[in-house]
Amino acid sequence: MAQHVTEVLGLLNDWAAAEQDNDAERLDGLLTDDFAGVGPLGFVLDRKQWLERYRKGLENRAFTVEAPDVRAYEGAAVVVGVMAQETTLKGEDKSGRFRVSLVTVRASDRWRLAHLHIGAAL
Image (tube, rainbow, N blue to C red):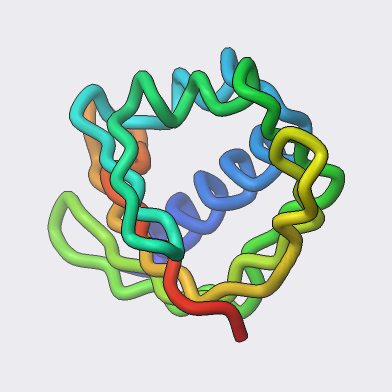
């Protein structure tokens, strides 16, 4: 399972880097086809909507996942951590620190992000 934890942490780093770079193309390869992202106000975005956020005015200047706690299982892992972002949406500041839970799955010999839930600001 230690190998799984290392691989999942690699996925998290890749995901955070793609978010920070506002790179929907890179994110495209990191998400499962049935990805769902739940925002801090309860809205749910499917994979297509998540990738389209950048065309709708989202801009990240900094984006990290801090203190990730990975719980690996056969073919899946759950991560709880803190998402720290410096972000604007259509010019409005959306920066903050949020509790985040992520579900990752191993598909086609690589880890992908299947679900993300962003909780209340810390």
